[in-house]
Image (cartoon, rainbow, N blue to C red; front, side, top):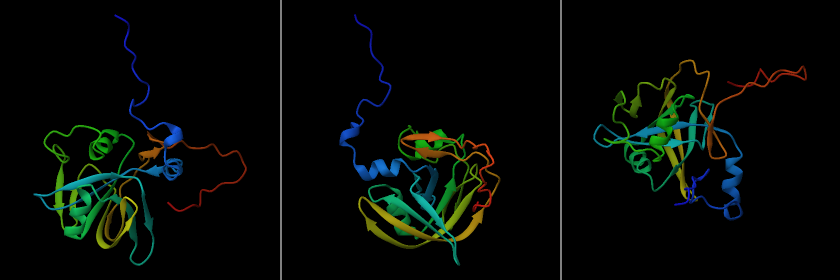
Amino acid sequence: MSGSQIHDQHPFVTPPDLRDPARQLRGRLASGVTLLTSGGPDARAGLTVSSLLIAEGEPSRVVALVGEATDLWPAIEESGAFVLHVLRGDDRQLADRFAGLRPSPGGLFAGLGVEDTAWGPSIAMLGVRAYCRLERSVETGFHRLVTGMIEQIDLEDLDEPLLYYRGRYRLLAEIPNTGGGSHSGASS
């Protein structure tokens, strides 16, 4: 019997020359990894989302792409609210669970400390959260462009956020200052 070969990448991945250029472009933008949750105690839904931005203002807003075919979109549409959770570098398994890439016996929220709020499920172990009221959504390709007004924010220190870049989770790496100027005054 000859030896078995173990693939170094997913055997069903689309070959590079057949990949959508817009998806390839999106993959070249590093993004923070978040969970969006919505729904009540009997109908909780959640999804890993990295296509997201925060728009400062009065009120500030979260703008995110949410797949229409997910369980999350109907929960947001019905409840009119959602919770954004920012993931830490050690939350990779949680990101995979809510992305549907890891089994979650008992459901997505099984074994997690969850508080049901007026905006949806709040996951206790994730201390950076925004509680949002749905303002509008627009059909955009295969997704809904969802805009939520931020009504409340919970912040804790977050030194190592989880990032997504070119199909893989990443962590921040500080670039040493070589004396060529500093951008330390950027928004945080």
